[in-house]
Length: 240
Image (cartoon, rainbow, N blue to C red):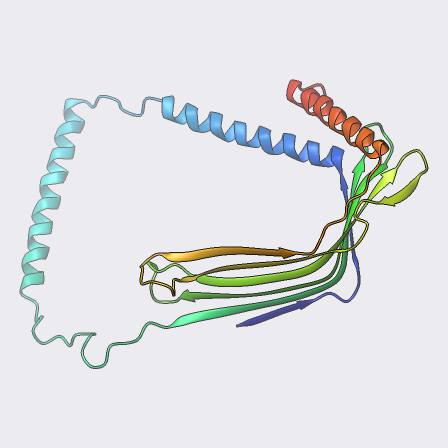
């Protein structure tokens, strides 16, 4: 099975820190609610004493079921098993595997992080990936559940990063030059020596990464971090 995905237009994504904090608080509340419900169910005493009449009825039902089971076993032993044709006669069916191939290309994708804790949208950081190419294969057995699937994938892209300088209201380069990165990941059988264990490898290749930033960027990041802590604390106390 081949699955191919291609995006012809650039993709722009804006992430609000306030919305991320709100989603995190909601997820935490839901997890705590489910945990409390599970604890309450465990603490409930599910066992109760039965009366003598109920106990006698259960014993009668148990004895009746045992008699029915003995009759079924006797009829099963009398069946004509020797005349049955085994499903394993002849050539045994070979275990087949199914392969899934994925291909994806993305010309450009931009993710912008926005600090909106103070009531206005203030851009903080922008990450752009260009010429992103993804390829992967998954080989998994169809008839057997005991074997683990084998896979291999590779990603090649070029990364650009910018930060917003609040003093000049301009985007400044965080990465001076495009940073080319190649990621290879695979899970396959070992070829160097015989073993039943599968080998999982991660290989990252990258060119030189040139970084440049000013003290204004550090001040903006520190302010956003403090606002995140304050906003998260208010959500935990229920003041929001």
